[in-house]
Structure formats: C-alpha cells, structure tokens
Length: 212
Image 1 (cartoon, one colour):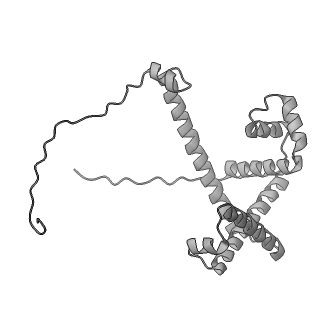
Image 2 (cartoon, helix red, strand yellow):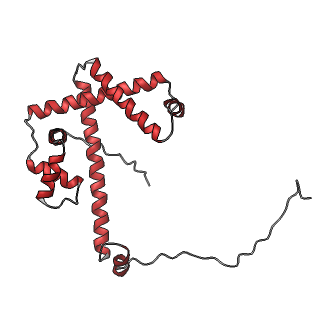
C-alpha cells in the first residue's frame, strides 16, 4: 500500500529518435506537385498568399466603405420590404436546420438567444443588406455602369471553367437569367468603383522601442 507515501521511480532512456524532414529538391517537387522546380513552387506559394491578402484587404475595405455610407445617408425602407427579406432569411435558416435535423427551438438554445433577439438580429441584418443594395443601385444609375458582353462571358468562364469555347459559353448564357447576372455584375462593378474612389488610410502599428 503506497497511498499517501512518496515514491521514487528510475527511468532509463535507451533511445532518442529525431524526425528528419526530406530536403526540398526539384526532384521531390516534381513528384509531389504540378511544379518542376523549388523556385516555381515557392513563387506559386508567394503569389497565392499575396492574392489571399489582397482579397481579404479588399473585402475589409468594401465592408468599411458600405458601413460608412449607410451611417451617413438616411434611407427610408418600406416595412413590407424588410419583412419580406426577414421571412426569406427565416425560411433559408429553417431549411438549413432541417438538413441537420434541428428545430428552430434547438438552434435558439444553442445560440443562447430568445426568439425576440433572434428576430431583431434578422431584421437588423436584412435592413443593412437592403440599404447596401439600394446604395449600389444608386451608384450604378449615377455612374451609368453596365456590364458588357465580355463581362458576362468572363463571369461564366470563372463559374464554369470547363466551358472553354465561346459557343459553349453562349449556350450556357441562354439557360440563365441574363438580367439577373447583369444586375449582379453591375453591383460588383459599383463596389469596385467605390473602392477605387475611396480615400483609404491604413493604420500602422507603432512599435515601442526599448532603450538599451
């Protein structure tokens, strides 16, 4: 019985293993990737990271621009429009929950929300989204922004890379709601217009220098 007593153990280490990573060579790169040299792989990783950083930065700028525009402009929205948007969001969430075999009551419990808080948040989100859409539509009208045929084709190529000929893309366009696609692209262009013409000031973190 050793309960409550101090016990000493002796442990003998017989072997220590160190994991060695394979040296990154052109030969290894060719085997494990689509690239032929270490330089090509490194450049691809660098480009991907730069593109990802730019995308995140652009999205952040867009969000801040829209929040400031919403704050500075009074936009009256019919209550019926907001109600319709909220109901649409409710139906979407309920369908998502059904796929996960969850009820709205279970969801609210998981989120620690009351039904009142849940509906209030939906209304706030819907109102902000409608205001954003109205602002972008105003920019489209004011700046006479209209997507070209080339814009439509480029968007289809982005969404469906396998459609590699003009004929295939034209056939695909005939199946789509072209007016809806044009409206979406026009709003994207209006957002790009706002970003290009915004005065963006990036805050730099100040480094505290310690005296030696």
